[in-house]
Length: 298
Picture 1 (cartoon, one colour):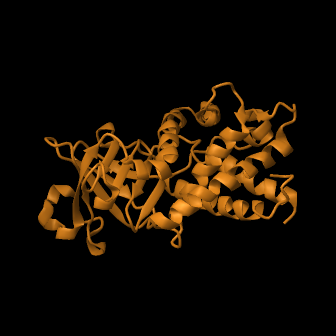
Picture 2 (cartoon, rainbow, N blue to C red):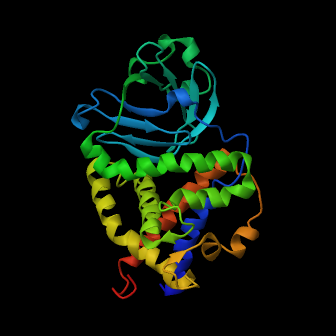
Picture 3 (tube, rainbow, N blue to C red):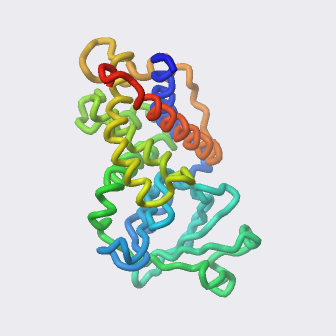
């Protein structure tokens, strides 16, 4: 694959990550604040004791021994009693979460496939199977071994929330807000390290959606590998779009006329699912190609 094709792939990844959230469609619903936080299915200090679930306004980091999900969540509807969420891996399936007012525990309600759309937590536990209702206790943070792999993605997810909130109400300010969410140094420029951080997040989202890597051991290896491929992806952007030779990129340098012609169409929740799937595919393709590049380009 030629160099310009590699650049096209990564630019598409970066722009898609920004533009996918740039609308303010009313069907993109924010998860109510009462549900946000970190939860454990058993103990907060021990991953071997069960799974962990981090929820922000628009994203999740779910980690168990055999299932992982990093990336956007899509709230279908929410009220003071429960929230209904479209499953990330199966858009046709929907589950519920609610909160226990006394303990602060998060309750996960999973209806059987034939009851999707027919029952809610208002119908009580008897409307769900015994395995379909799980309780997660609130935690202050992820345990060290989980934070080592997913801590950066959790920080990025929380930072992106502020930008996505702006995107829902002000499409003109959306691109800048998303750019700023990756601008760790807050100087209006993205350095190679800051672009690599964005790439690592996108690659981890993509890896968590893959059936072949949806387990903690494989994803840990892919996360470690992303510390090699992500800087190379970032370097390709610098080599092609750092027009002033500053060693960093501005929003205009990255996108320029593409943002001007992107329009202000508001994506739906379904559009965002498709967009993030495409972003993941492109990111994985780009990282594979980068591993074959000469060291001088990396």
